Image (cartoon, helix red, strand yellow):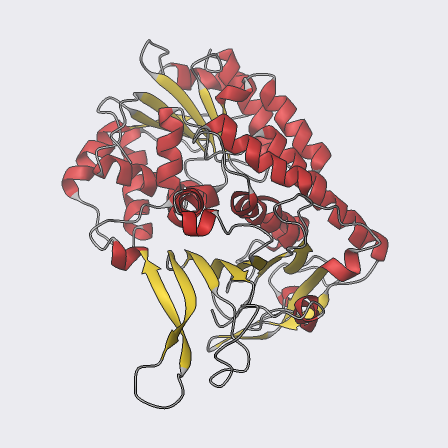
Length: 491
């Protein structure tokens, strides 16, 4: 991250909401601490609660103290950051009320207005209309959109069309916070800066790839929202498909927005559709029942507060995806995500093909495959699993699997690992779109997801049960076992 020379007014809609308090405001504070916010930049909080600037600053300070658990708020940094904070009391449904923003945000040369919509997407069109009424939609203005961008392809297209009536595509920044994670970005360096990987990144040497996003938590009091979404739409449509695209894409001609987006889009276009004919073979959906996560007893999904007993919404999804192009012909991508798993873990496991001939059969009858493990959370880093000789004397050479750990925290122990939102906010301020999702990417992802949902509806089966604190339904084990493989739960 380099010093930002961009002066902006960041207008934060939904500034008193959970996302802003937990992630966005702490991220902006960290940018200020790192000297990455322009001295004359401003953060303009917008919400419907009536308060003045000082009361807003008090709320922001309280949020920083509550959610920045690894460090205390630095008084000197806070003084600089607080001076940038302004507040606007706006009823978002009242177009005339947006004049309060116009009184604070002046469109002048060298100052870019950036509207961050941390609100439900139903408000996007109304907010854009309000911004247009005060002249904050014209170039060089930008808008940042939080997910979810729709619940299916038609609704996603409708949202994009509504925003597109006010903003050109070059002004729109669609957030997927996974794309700001250090390890996800490191995929580009790992793949394209190291010949030992770039030359082996295809069906000739890779057996299969697993992508897991496991959560220990349940619905966390959001039962109604989650039940309308489900794990497929909440996690696979955006996060997992974005990670898959970065793993599978062809080398871009240049490291810029247009080329990276185009290569990711080619992957999404190449995904083999899931249909009623292959849905049982390639997908598993589950729903957790009561059980134990760690030492805590937790209720089942249908027993959570506010639950509807007849719900058939999935809290677990496992998929076998196929990318129909030359590079990945015959290489399955296994995707798995669920709530109430034994641990919180997001990782990519790339399993290479076994050695064709084993000269060490006296030590091991079958050599295990090498694995490249890319950890996204909780501890970001990269591991390589390989075989090594066990030290010692003896007639036979003894081999043992060992791990080469490239932990970011140990390798770069003096470097703070920035939160994903810090990087994404900085890129939006600097006008770089390459870590944001294009309209075409969103719509192609929805097209594939809608095919899965339609196939499930045609099948007419309820989700398979799995006990909280386990790795999902037994059928998810079978998904890999039918191919002679298994989930890498011990990685």
